[in-house]
Image (cartoon, rainbow over all chains, first blue to last red; front, side):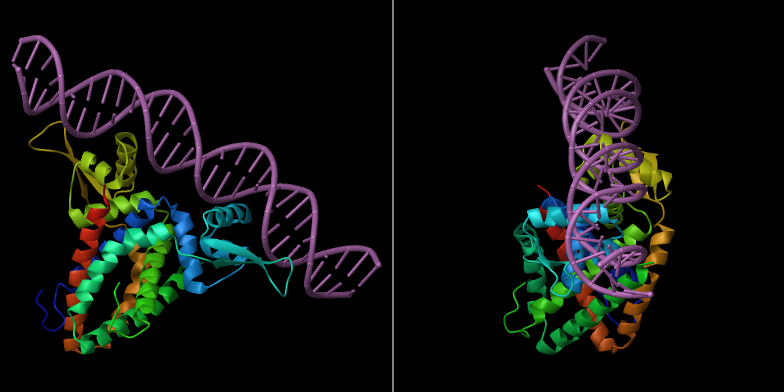
Length: 149
Length: 149
DNA sequence: CATAATCTCTTCCTCAGAGAAGAGAAATCT
DNA sequence: AGATTTCTCTTCTCTGAGGAAGAGATTATG
């Protein structure tokens, strides 16, 4: 790739990168029979930490009924655990107890390939990359939060 | 990903980054009422270019019936166009005719934030980042292809 | 040619997942 | 204490996506 200044195809490169990452994520979810909403909720729980069913329902956009059954599915599959809230006995805390093993397995080839790529960079270049990863993660997280109406 | 020799939290940083990107993608799709499979198919068409319903069905893992209706939905919404194959009159070519405007709109805040971040790097650092984007896109694409059984 | 294979599309059926409404338990407010 | 509000969970219903089987059209094969 030609990399001089702000190259004119920067947007195209980034779009292709984003599409490839998204497609791989979707394909991975499919490969381990995880429903779209279920993985969505798992991602939320991993990024924001444990929360109540109410908040999870709000973030997923589901009403209380589907939220309960969503948590049932995740709990059944062993990805999530319900525990009583210490300060409010009506509430329940939902926390991730283990990433789907199958998902890790399915994503392993991609991780290996990315690892291979990263090993090709110098420590200084890796500093740049991981600086970007950290900042971009926050940026996407904020942008996602802003999407909630 | 193997993170030997890198900063100890490299794996965690990368996982958070990946989760944030995936979650934002899912949230964006939701925000414009695109079904998970529909967006999946659109991503495939964008990354691999025009193809026949048969190949699209193979890549999405759908049988012919659902594939036809998937294309119907995308065509109805104006994202995709059917045209007859010139060399085989049984075949149909499905091609992306326009990215969902609403999706672009929904993703704009994230793009703006990422653009802001990228503007903070020197040209040399941008070289590293876009070199990575290009390589990683190919890596994820290959890993996704390997997922197909 | 005639038969088989290929490709898309249609039809019917099934079922997971989402909404609505309400019950029960617990906290909060007079 | 009694009343209201807040949470979670249950039940019922329904929409919509996906699978199976087959029709129609076209191409390939013997």
